[in-house]
Length: 65
Image 1 (tube, rainbow, N blue to C red):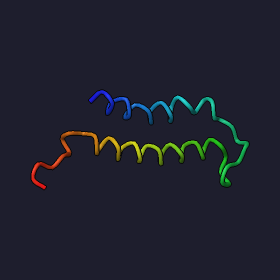
Image 2 (image 1 turned 90 degrees about the horizontal axis):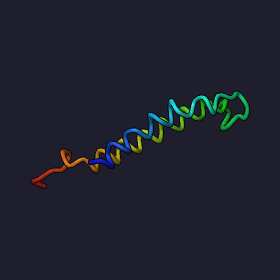
Image 3 (image 1 turned 135 degrees about the vertical axis):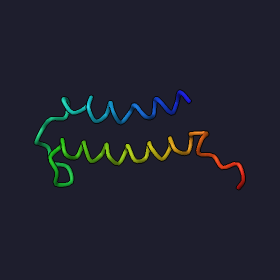
Image 4 (image 1 turned 180 degrees about the vertical axis):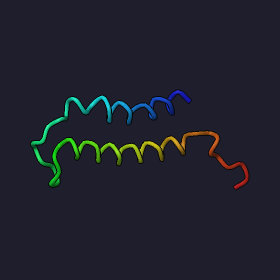
């Protein structure tokens, strides 16, 4: 259960904790300023982490499969 909470905090740290360090217009990555790329990257990472958390949560297990 502790692992689930740690995984849930990672996106919060990535979004808000990383913004002051990546607040740059240059370089451009995939045609986006770096800060926009950082936010889009964390949206994708958050989706993956939420899928992992969903599978790890014992409340989501089916008893009668």
